[in-house]
Length: 196
Figure 1: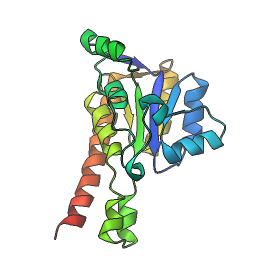
Figure 2 (figure 1 turned 90 degrees about the horizontal axis):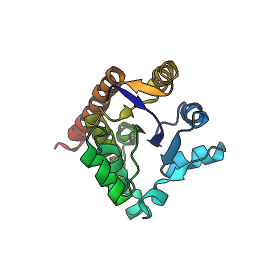
Figure 3 (figure 1 turned 60 degrees about the vertical axis):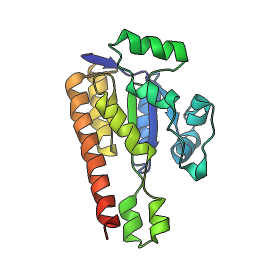
Figure 4 (figure 1 turned 120 degrees about the vertical axis):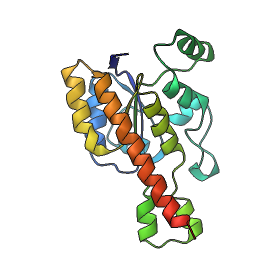
């Protein structure tokens, strides 16, 4: 898929910089936003329409928020190859709506380390769902746009404005590489912290 129209996004961010402006841009162009916890609250407080992840999955957040987005209604919508009719048929058969954009940045594990939290407390700052969504969207960049940091909101908006709310394959591939770079750095930090 050379040009990807953006119709549906999942946004789950720790760093809320530029979030309201970016979400407002998406909503003004009729993009549906699905979101989690704190991100959802920020968007709702700003008066922006947002769909809770639990409304999509039909399942509440559990284990103190450890399990929110790890669900076929989320990951099926992220990982489906839109050029593969069998993938799209599966989504149709299972009632799964595809996503076009994953906007995720990760729990602040570096901040947890800097605050010298106990191991038990620091472990709670290890993001699981976020890296899974980033990696899934990056793997499937032929059918998805992934934005792993607020620094990419402006370039993404410029790209969408220039292409009537679509994004090019070249831009999606670049963002996929940045997403894998972000998860790689994150894992390296955790590895270093846990190594005896």
